[in-house]
Length: 403
Image 1 (cartoon, helix red, strand yellow):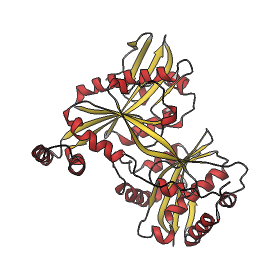
Image 2 (cartoon, rainbow, N blue to C red):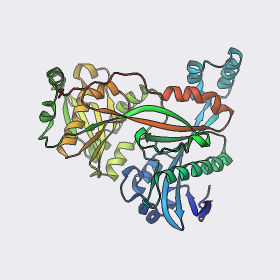
Image 3 (cartoon, rainbow, N blue to C red):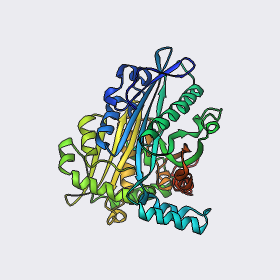
Image 4 (cartoon, rainbow, N blue to C red):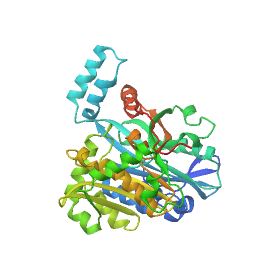
Protein backbone atom coordinates (compact mmCIF):
# COMPACT_ATOMS: atom_id res chain seq x y z
CA UNK A 1 0.00 0.00 0.00
CA UNK A 2 2.40 2.65 -1.22
CA UNK A 3 1.44 6.28 -1.09
CA UNK A 4 -0.58 6.98 -4.22
CA UNK A 5 -2.23 10.11 -5.58
CA UNK A 6 -5.93 10.58 -5.03
CA UNK A 7 -7.80 7.47 -6.11
CA UNK A 8 -11.46 7.07 -6.87
CA UNK A 9 -13.57 5.94 -3.91
CA UNK A 10 -17.23 6.44 -4.83
CA UNK A 11 -19.24 9.28 -6.33
CA UNK A 12 -17.32 12.54 -5.95
CA UNK A 13 -15.09 11.09 -3.21
CA UNK A 14 -11.40 10.32 -3.71
CA UNK A 15 -8.80 9.14 -1.20
CA UNK A 16 -5.10 8.83 -0.52
CA UNK A 17 -3.45 6.15 1.62
CA UNK A 18 -0.24 6.55 3.61
CA UNK A 19 1.99 3.97 5.32
CA UNK A 20 3.45 6.45 7.80
CA UNK A 21 2.33 9.65 9.44
CA UNK A 22 5.56 11.19 8.14
CA UNK A 23 4.12 10.91 4.62
CA UNK A 24 0.68 12.30 5.47
CA UNK A 25 -0.42 15.67 4.11
CA UNK A 26 -0.58 17.38 7.53
CA UNK A 27 -2.41 20.47 6.31
CA UNK A 28 -5.21 18.35 4.83
CA UNK A 29 -5.32 16.11 7.93
CA UNK A 30 -5.46 19.06 10.34
CA UNK A 31 -8.10 20.79 8.23
CA UNK A 32 -10.42 17.88 9.07
CA UNK A 33 -9.62 17.27 12.75
CA UNK A 34 -9.38 20.99 13.67
CA UNK A 35 -7.36 20.05 16.79
CA UNK A 36 -10.57 18.60 18.26
CA UNK A 37 -9.13 15.15 19.01
CA UNK A 38 -5.67 14.88 20.58
CA UNK A 39 -5.55 11.14 19.81
CA UNK A 40 -5.90 11.87 16.09
CA UNK A 41 -3.27 14.62 16.06
CA UNK A 42 -0.27 13.98 13.77
CA UNK A 43 2.26 14.41 16.61
CA UNK A 44 0.54 11.84 18.80
CA UNK A 45 -0.01 9.31 15.99
CA UNK A 46 3.58 9.69 14.79
CA UNK A 47 4.93 8.97 18.27
CA UNK A 48 2.71 5.90 18.78
CA UNK A 49 3.76 4.65 15.35
CA UNK A 50 7.48 5.14 16.07
CA UNK A 51 7.27 3.43 19.46
CA UNK A 52 5.54 0.27 18.24
CA UNK A 53 6.96 -0.57 14.85
CA UNK A 54 7.63 -3.11 13.42
CA UNK A 55 5.25 -5.03 15.76
CA UNK A 56 2.35 -2.82 14.65
CA UNK A 57 1.98 -1.42 11.14
CA UNK A 58 0.11 1.85 10.81
CA UNK A 59 -2.00 3.07 7.92
CA UNK A 60 -3.69 6.41 7.37
CA UNK A 61 -6.29 7.66 4.90
CA UNK A 62 -7.54 11.06 3.84
CA UNK A 63 -10.79 11.24 1.88
CA UNK A 64 -11.58 14.20 -0.36
CA UNK A 65 -14.87 15.49 -1.68
CA UNK A 66 -14.37 17.47 -4.86
CA UNK A 67 -10.67 17.66 -3.91
CA UNK A 68 -11.40 19.12 -0.45
CA UNK A 69 -10.42 16.99 2.59
CA UNK A 70 -13.52 15.88 4.51
CA UNK A 71 -12.58 12.64 6.31
CA UNK A 72 -9.48 11.08 7.94
CA UNK A 73 -8.97 7.73 9.64
CA UNK A 74 -6.15 5.60 11.03
CA UNK A 75 -5.51 1.85 11.15
CA UNK A 76 -3.26 -0.45 13.17
CA UNK A 77 -2.30 -3.81 11.67
CA UNK A 78 -1.24 -6.54 14.10
CA UNK A 79 -0.12 -10.11 13.38
CA UNK A 80 -0.88 -12.83 15.94
CA UNK A 81 0.87 -16.17 16.21
CA UNK A 82 -1.10 -19.40 16.66
CA UNK A 83 -0.21 -19.85 20.33
CA UNK A 84 -1.92 -16.55 21.26
CA UNK A 85 -5.28 -18.10 20.42
CA UNK A 86 -4.65 -21.64 21.65
CA UNK A 87 -5.96 -21.22 25.19
CA UNK A 88 -8.61 -18.79 24.02
CA UNK A 89 -10.10 -21.30 21.60
CA UNK A 90 -9.97 -24.21 24.05
CA UNK A 91 -11.75 -22.29 26.80
CA UNK A 92 -14.37 -20.52 24.72
CA UNK A 93 -15.41 -22.59 21.72
CA UNK A 94 -18.43 -24.77 22.49
CA UNK A 95 -19.96 -25.22 19.05
CA UNK A 96 -17.20 -27.33 17.52
CA UNK A 97 -17.17 -31.10 17.61
CA UNK A 98 -14.43 -32.63 19.73
CA UNK A 99 -12.80 -34.07 16.59
CA UNK A 100 -12.55 -30.67 14.93
CA UNK A 101 -11.30 -29.09 18.17
CA UNK A 102 -8.56 -31.72 18.46
CA UNK A 103 -7.48 -31.02 14.89
CA UNK A 104 -7.31 -27.32 15.69
CA UNK A 105 -5.30 -28.05 18.85
CA UNK A 106 -2.80 -30.06 16.80
CA UNK A 107 -2.50 -27.19 14.35
CA UNK A 108 -1.94 -24.71 17.18
CA UNK A 109 0.74 -26.91 18.70
CA UNK A 110 2.54 -27.52 15.41
CA UNK A 111 2.42 -23.93 14.16
CA UNK A 112 2.39 -22.03 17.44
CA UNK A 113 5.05 -19.58 16.25
CA UNK A 114 3.38 -19.01 12.88
CA UNK A 115 1.18 -16.02 12.17
CA UNK A 116 -2.37 -17.27 11.75
CA UNK A 117 -4.30 -14.08 12.34
CA UNK A 118 -3.84 -10.57 11.02
CA UNK A 119 -6.12 -8.06 12.69
CA UNK A 120 -6.70 -4.70 11.02
CA UNK A 121 -8.03 -2.26 13.61
CA UNK A 122 -9.58 1.00 12.54
CA UNK A 123 -8.89 3.05 15.63
CA UNK A 124 -6.38 3.04 18.45
CA UNK A 125 -5.71 -0.11 20.47
CA UNK A 126 -4.04 1.95 23.22
CA UNK A 127 -6.97 4.18 24.19
CA UNK A 128 -10.72 3.65 24.49
CA UNK A 129 -13.28 5.87 22.85
CA UNK A 130 -14.01 7.08 19.35
CA UNK A 131 -10.57 7.81 17.95
CA UNK A 132 -10.77 5.97 14.64
CA UNK A 133 -11.89 8.78 12.35
CA UNK A 134 -12.85 12.42 12.08
CA UNK A 135 -14.91 14.23 9.51
CA UNK A 136 -15.59 17.83 8.58
CA UNK A 137 -18.86 19.71 8.86
CA UNK A 138 -19.21 19.41 5.08
CA UNK A 139 -20.54 15.85 5.46
CA UNK A 140 -23.07 14.20 7.76
CA UNK A 141 -22.32 11.42 10.25
CA UNK A 142 -24.17 8.88 8.10
CA UNK A 143 -21.88 9.78 5.19
CA UNK A 144 -18.85 9.40 7.44
CA UNK A 145 -19.91 5.83 8.34
CA UNK A 146 -20.50 5.10 4.66
CA UNK A 147 -16.96 6.31 3.86
CA UNK A 148 -15.57 4.37 6.82
CA UNK A 149 -17.02 1.13 5.47
CA UNK A 150 -15.60 1.73 1.99
CA UNK A 151 -12.13 2.67 3.26
CA UNK A 152 -11.96 -0.26 5.70
CA UNK A 153 -12.75 -2.71 2.91
CA UNK A 154 -10.03 -1.25 0.68
CA UNK A 155 -7.45 -1.41 3.49
CA UNK A 156 -8.33 -5.05 4.16
CA UNK A 157 -8.04 -6.00 0.49
CA UNK A 158 -4.70 -4.24 0.02
CA UNK A 159 -3.20 -5.56 3.27
CA UNK A 160 -4.19 -9.07 2.22
CA UNK A 161 -1.51 -8.87 -0.47
CA UNK A 162 1.03 -8.95 2.36
CA UNK A 163 -0.44 -11.88 4.28
CA UNK A 164 -3.68 -13.40 5.49
CA UNK A 165 -6.25 -10.93 6.73
CA UNK A 166 -8.30 -12.60 9.43
CA UNK A 167 -10.56 -9.81 10.62
CA UNK A 168 -11.23 -6.10 10.42
CA UNK A 169 -12.11 -4.42 13.73
CA UNK A 170 -13.56 -0.92 14.03
CA UNK A 171 -13.52 0.58 17.54
CA UNK A 172 -15.12 2.27 19.62
CA UNK A 173 -18.47 4.05 19.28
CA UNK A 174 -20.83 5.38 21.93
CA UNK A 175 -24.20 3.71 21.45
CA UNK A 176 -26.13 6.98 21.68
CA UNK A 177 -24.06 8.50 18.85
CA UNK A 178 -24.56 5.79 16.23
CA UNK A 179 -26.40 6.74 13.02
CA UNK A 180 -29.90 5.36 12.62
CA UNK A 181 -28.95 3.51 9.45
CA UNK A 182 -27.19 0.18 10.06
CA UNK A 183 -24.49 1.00 7.53
CA UNK A 184 -21.72 -1.25 8.83
CA UNK A 185 -24.02 -4.18 9.69
CA UNK A 186 -25.46 -4.10 6.17
CA UNK A 187 -21.92 -4.65 4.89
CA UNK A 188 -21.22 -7.82 6.92
CA UNK A 189 -19.75 -6.16 10.02
CA UNK A 190 -20.91 -7.72 13.29
CA UNK A 191 -21.80 -5.30 16.08
CA UNK A 192 -20.85 -6.26 19.64
CA UNK A 193 -20.67 -4.48 22.97
CA UNK A 194 -17.48 -4.03 24.98
CA UNK A 195 -16.69 -2.77 28.47
CA UNK A 196 -18.17 0.74 28.87
CA UNK A 197 -16.18 3.89 29.35
CA UNK A 198 -16.56 5.07 32.93
CA UNK A 199 -16.89 8.85 33.03
CA UNK A 200 -17.32 11.33 35.88
CA UNK A 201 -19.01 14.64 35.13
CA UNK A 202 -17.27 17.00 37.55
CA UNK A 203 -19.77 19.23 39.42
CA UNK A 204 -19.26 22.98 39.07
CA UNK A 205 -17.75 25.28 41.69
CA UNK A 206 -15.77 22.70 43.63
CA UNK A 207 -12.83 24.02 45.62
CA UNK A 208 -11.11 20.67 45.90
CA UNK A 209 -11.48 16.96 46.56
CA UNK A 210 -13.04 17.56 49.99
CA UNK A 211 -15.94 19.40 48.34
CA UNK A 212 -16.47 16.44 46.02
CA UNK A 213 -16.47 13.94 48.90
CA UNK A 214 -18.95 16.15 50.74
CA UNK A 215 -21.47 15.32 48.01
CA UNK A 216 -21.32 11.64 49.05
CA UNK A 217 -23.75 9.89 51.34
CA UNK A 218 -22.46 9.16 54.85
CA UNK A 219 -21.62 5.55 53.92
CA UNK A 220 -19.38 6.55 51.03
CA UNK A 221 -17.83 9.52 52.87
CA UNK A 222 -16.71 7.13 55.60
CA UNK A 223 -15.46 4.72 52.97
CA UNK A 224 -13.42 7.46 51.29
CA UNK A 225 -11.95 8.57 54.63
CA UNK A 226 -10.92 4.98 55.34
CA UNK A 227 -9.23 4.74 51.92
CA UNK A 228 -7.30 7.96 52.51
CA UNK A 229 -6.31 6.83 56.02
CA UNK A 230 -4.70 3.56 54.92
CA UNK A 231 -2.91 5.47 52.17
CA UNK A 232 -1.26 8.03 54.45
CA UNK A 233 2.10 6.23 54.30
CA UNK A 234 2.13 6.63 50.54
CA UNK A 235 3.64 9.82 49.10
CA UNK A 236 2.67 11.08 45.64
CA UNK A 237 4.99 12.91 43.27
CA UNK A 238 4.40 14.39 39.84
CA UNK A 239 7.30 12.94 37.86
CA UNK A 240 9.46 15.03 35.56
CA UNK A 241 10.73 13.62 32.28
CA UNK A 242 14.14 13.01 33.90
CA UNK A 243 12.55 11.17 36.84
CA UNK A 244 10.47 9.02 34.49
CA UNK A 245 13.63 8.08 32.61
CA UNK A 246 15.40 7.17 35.85
CA UNK A 247 12.43 5.11 37.10
CA UNK A 248 11.62 3.59 33.70
CA UNK A 249 12.35 -0.07 34.65
CA UNK A 250 10.23 0.16 37.82
CA UNK A 251 7.40 1.96 36.02
CA UNK A 252 7.29 -0.64 33.29
CA UNK A 253 7.34 -3.53 35.75
CA UNK A 254 4.34 -2.06 37.56
CA UNK A 255 2.58 -1.56 34.23
CA UNK A 256 3.27 -5.21 33.37
CA UNK A 257 1.65 -6.25 36.66
CA UNK A 258 -1.60 -4.68 35.49
CA UNK A 259 -1.16 -5.85 31.89
CA UNK A 260 -0.72 -9.48 32.98
CA UNK A 261 -4.05 -9.30 34.81
CA UNK A 262 -5.85 -7.84 31.80
CA UNK A 263 -8.81 -9.77 30.50
CA UNK A 264 -7.55 -9.81 26.95
CA UNK A 265 -3.97 -8.85 26.06
CA UNK A 266 -4.21 -7.38 22.60
CA UNK A 267 -1.20 -5.06 22.46
CA UNK A 268 1.58 -4.15 24.87
CA UNK A 269 3.17 -0.76 25.34
CA UNK A 270 6.77 -0.12 24.36
CA UNK A 271 9.10 -0.06 27.37
CA UNK A 272 9.97 3.63 26.83
CA UNK A 273 6.35 4.70 26.20
CA UNK A 274 5.89 6.86 29.31
CA UNK A 275 9.24 8.62 28.91
CA UNK A 276 8.66 9.43 25.26
CA UNK A 277 5.10 10.64 25.89
CA UNK A 278 6.27 12.97 28.66
CA UNK A 279 9.22 14.23 26.63
CA UNK A 280 6.98 15.00 23.64
CA UNK A 281 3.85 16.23 25.44
CA UNK A 282 5.31 17.81 28.57
CA UNK A 283 2.33 20.10 29.22
CA UNK A 284 -0.37 17.61 28.27
CA UNK A 285 0.82 14.24 29.60
CA UNK A 286 1.51 13.46 33.26
CA UNK A 287 2.87 10.56 35.29
CA UNK A 288 2.45 10.41 39.07
CA UNK A 289 4.63 8.17 41.21
CA UNK A 290 3.38 6.59 44.45
CA UNK A 291 6.18 5.87 46.91
CA UNK A 292 6.42 3.81 50.08
CA UNK A 293 9.66 4.33 51.99
CA UNK A 294 11.20 5.88 48.86
CA UNK A 295 10.30 2.86 46.72
CA UNK A 296 7.97 3.22 43.74
CA UNK A 297 4.92 1.02 44.41
CA UNK A 298 2.39 2.45 41.92
CA UNK A 299 1.94 5.08 39.26
CA UNK A 300 -0.81 6.72 37.29
CA UNK A 301 -0.74 8.61 34.01
CA UNK A 302 -3.07 10.68 31.91
CA UNK A 303 -3.69 13.57 29.56
CA UNK A 304 -5.07 17.06 30.10
CA UNK A 305 -7.11 17.43 26.93
CA UNK A 306 -8.22 20.76 25.42
CA UNK A 307 -11.92 19.80 25.42
CA UNK A 308 -12.27 20.16 29.23
CA UNK A 309 -11.47 16.47 29.76
CA UNK A 310 -8.91 14.70 31.91
CA UNK A 311 -8.17 11.37 30.23
CA UNK A 312 -6.97 8.76 32.74
CA UNK A 313 -4.44 6.56 30.99
CA UNK A 314 -2.32 3.59 32.07
CA UNK A 315 -1.56 2.75 35.68
CA UNK A 316 0.77 0.36 37.46
CA UNK A 317 0.35 -1.26 40.86
CA UNK A 318 2.32 -3.47 43.24
CA UNK A 319 -0.48 -5.95 43.98
CA UNK A 320 1.30 -7.36 47.03
CA UNK A 321 0.54 -4.18 48.97
CA UNK A 322 -2.40 -2.89 46.93
CA UNK A 323 -5.12 -3.78 49.41
CA UNK A 324 -3.11 -2.85 52.48
CA UNK A 325 -2.61 0.70 51.23
CA UNK A 326 -5.63 0.93 48.88
CA UNK A 327 -3.31 1.93 46.02
CA UNK A 328 -5.88 1.54 43.27
CA UNK A 329 -8.61 3.42 45.14
CA UNK A 330 -6.19 6.25 45.97
CA UNK A 331 -5.26 6.44 42.29
CA UNK A 332 -8.93 6.92 41.38
CA UNK A 333 -9.29 9.73 43.88
CA UNK A 334 -6.08 11.33 42.64
CA UNK A 335 -7.54 11.47 39.14
CA UNK A 336 -10.64 13.18 40.56
CA UNK A 337 -8.49 15.65 42.48
CA UNK A 338 -6.50 16.51 39.35
CA UNK A 339 -9.67 17.02 37.32
CA UNK A 340 -11.04 19.43 39.94
CA UNK A 341 -7.74 21.30 40.36
CA UNK A 342 -7.34 21.77 36.60
CA UNK A 343 -10.98 22.88 36.19
CA UNK A 344 -11.92 19.98 33.92
CA UNK A 345 -15.58 19.22 33.34
CA UNK A 346 -15.08 15.53 32.60
CA UNK A 347 -12.90 12.71 33.89
CA UNK A 348 -12.66 9.73 31.58
CA UNK A 349 -11.59 6.75 33.70
CA UNK A 350 -11.68 4.33 30.77
CA UNK A 351 -12.70 0.70 30.75
CA UNK A 352 -12.34 -2.15 33.29
CA UNK A 353 -13.21 -2.24 37.01
CA UNK A 354 -16.54 -0.61 36.25
CA UNK A 355 -18.14 -1.33 39.62
CA UNK A 356 -15.23 0.08 41.61
CA UNK A 357 -15.17 3.19 39.44
CA UNK A 358 -18.89 3.65 39.96
CA UNK A 359 -18.27 3.79 43.73
CA UNK A 360 -16.34 7.05 43.22
CA UNK A 361 -19.05 8.57 41.03
CA UNK A 362 -18.32 7.32 37.51
CA UNK A 363 -21.19 6.43 35.20
CA UNK A 364 -21.12 3.92 32.36
CA UNK A 365 -21.17 5.14 28.77
CA UNK A 366 -21.87 2.11 26.60
CA UNK A 367 -19.52 1.32 23.72
CA UNK A 368 -19.87 -0.91 20.68
CA UNK A 369 -17.35 -2.20 18.17
CA UNK A 370 -17.68 -3.79 14.75
CA UNK A 371 -15.79 -6.77 13.38
CA UNK A 372 -15.79 -8.50 10.01
CA UNK A 373 -14.26 -12.00 9.58
CA UNK A 374 -12.18 -12.34 6.41
CA UNK A 375 -11.40 -16.07 6.25
CA UNK A 376 -11.92 -19.49 7.86
CA UNK A 377 -9.47 -18.92 10.69
CA UNK A 378 -11.25 -15.78 11.80
CA UNK A 379 -14.62 -17.52 11.66
CA UNK A 380 -13.28 -20.18 14.04
CA UNK A 381 -11.86 -17.72 16.57
CA UNK A 382 -14.37 -14.90 16.10
CA UNK A 383 -16.89 -16.09 18.70
CA UNK A 384 -14.29 -16.58 21.47
CA UNK A 385 -12.64 -13.30 20.48
CA UNK A 386 -15.91 -11.41 20.88
CA UNK A 387 -16.77 -13.40 24.00
CA UNK A 388 -13.55 -12.26 25.64
CA UNK A 389 -14.35 -8.64 24.86
CA UNK A 390 -17.93 -8.80 26.14
CA UNK A 391 -18.66 -6.76 29.28
CA UNK A 392 -18.70 -8.73 32.52
CA UNK A 393 -21.75 -8.35 34.73
CA UNK A 394 -21.42 -5.73 37.44
CA UNK A 395 -23.64 -3.76 39.80
CA UNK A 396 -23.66 0.03 39.29
CA UNK A 397 -23.16 1.99 42.51
CA UNK A 398 -23.71 5.64 43.32
CA UNK A 399 -21.87 7.31 46.20
CA UNK A 400 -23.87 10.52 46.06
CA UNK A 401 -26.63 11.63 48.38
CA UNK A 402 -30.09 10.97 47.05
CA UNK A 403 -32.09 14.03 46.09
